[in-house]
Length: 258
Image (tube, rainbow, N blue to C red; front, top):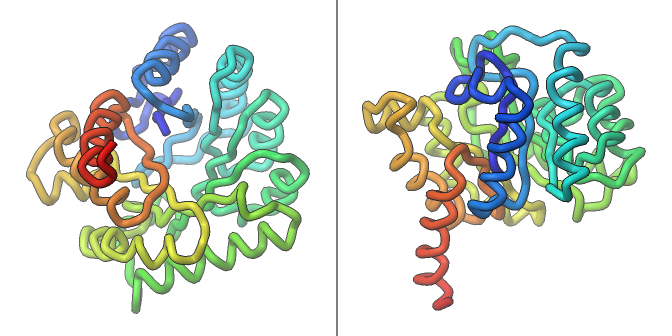
């Protein structure tokens, strides 16, 4: 999953793709580099980020979704808002990626009324406050149980299991220790039978480990992606598609002999 943020304030690529032509070109390049899906975000959910008005998010995301989907590119739209979900689905999105796991009123119904995929992510709190003092008794169990409950709610609403992906939400209300525990526990999440997405690309926890600024975190991001896939993640959400695809090709050749 290639990341395409059309926001002024995302933590790594904010402001880079506000121009529609640049955004489309970057999406095409990520597809050429090996991405299977382009994840478009019109509202930053980095720690401390302020909410974006619904109309602004729609203005940022929907024309781009229409253009890319119309060109045959599989698009995911990263949003918490049911109105944006409905507009994205109408514009041709193949997936909704919700950091709120369809807990907003009307969100579950918006996705259930369609045939698109859904990625359910775990987040403790809200982006503005989630990193202030996150606490868990047993982070791996709590995150797994939350995601399974949300996935079961989706199935009860008529969303078949094959459409559901779960994401433990690295960095969303978690300390470095929480993130490392969740990464080690990915086999337990994968054992639930739901496809697992891991999003660790260039995140601050990697910088805590390496001491690198966000611009220098490519090597750490590649290591994190490989660690996630080795532990059962079926998808990784990344900024650096070409480099991640190359790393995964080598790892798969070693593991599978092809």
